[in-house]
Image 1 (tube, helix red, strand yellow):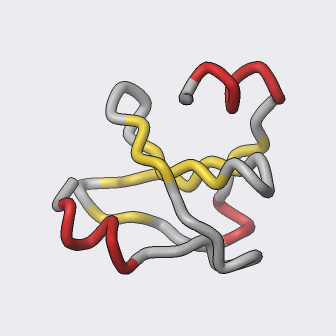
Image 2 (image 1 turned 90 degrees about the vertical axis):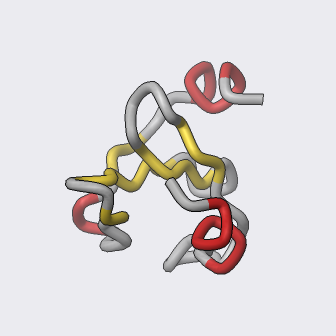
Length: 62
């Protein structure tokens, strides 16, 4: 994932910052506990496509 792209992408729901989870190929919004998938190198920034995360998963990314 290009770091320049990460600098401009925000969560579509809360407009908060996203964290890149390289292992799962997801962009994570800690505030909303959602993980947006990255498919073929393209972030899918649709709330309907986001995976709900547990508090433990979010904490593990810190």
